[in-house]
Length: 480
Ligand code: GLN
Image (cartoon, rainbow, N blue to C red):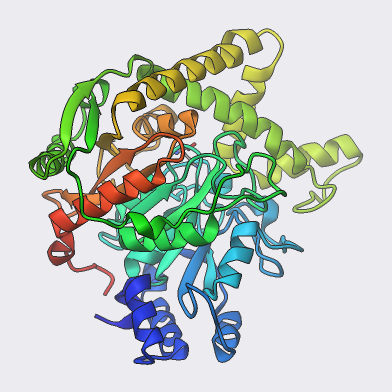
């Protein structure tokens, strides 16, 4: 165990008692980056010099001296922010996202910006315009995505924790694939100011960490009302660490039968159900429920998300910032060539699809219908949460797959079936590891809660983490 393998709270303890200095902590992470980054390729930009400069001063706050990574669709003043797109390859934001300001105020040290699927569209990080990121557990496998760089960095000890963004699972799926904790907060809990939009009604920033305690610590720092984000919710500041309690007695858990009836990796299903049994043995009350509209969630997610994306990506036209084509005789051609040259294949596919579902003639048939089903789904979740504290499901139907093994768009979209309903309903969900497959790849269990129910899911996840004791069962990372 080196310093770079510790959790935030373990590092904070060592820093507070002066057992180690912030310089020593940073050095450990930079050495690990030096050793493994060539194989993992978690980062788009590494800010080692800025980090060194920062630890040379006095740092104060709940994250003082903690080296963190930030997904490359979150704006960092003076530091290139690309969204892993050729469109923004040389874009340097003139301001910080609110979450970055908050990390800064809390004393965190930013190590760099992490690789992702271009504009957060994808689930492998293979759609980055720059390079692929690989899973530190098994290098020929994907780390998941779109926040795959953030998850790979944390799993490999290249950051103590990271921020990701989640529109349909992009925090939870890579966290699950890399054996980590990933939390998608309630819509409106964490400011989106400075987050490069994919689909504004679904996007939410959240933490990817090594354990539940770290997730609570980071959520404490990044949550809160922000007048610069119109969807930010006014609520009292919650101390999420107050929910780090081992207590499952009387906790009411719902298992939606639609999630368990499907045909998917039986190792994943068994591992999740075994974890649920352990929770039951500790006093949780487990019952089967039904969420009939869940069946449509992948379809409506891809209609709504691409519709919104076609609109939010319209700003990349070569005029104000970002890439501009050099080959153009007039302005219309400049728009066309800029967008043709600088967007990747998946982004183009989604812009086309999104433009189609919003066009006259299709709008009523697709977009409006999808909105109606979204409302139904929200109501179904609300009904369940009248009687239950949590909904428990697998995070993903499969464990991390081999890079290049899933290429058909529809096949990969279906892999999002367990995560997208959470974004559609605007509710919070957390993933934590619940076991390993026979191939020694991590399996994630997902706990969903009602809107603003972060406290309950943190308590349940913390209790489950203590019950499972997986830290003793971790396979050796292939990259070390
Ligand atoms: N995999 C999903 C998609 O491609 C989710 C992405 C995300 O959450 N950003 O849209």
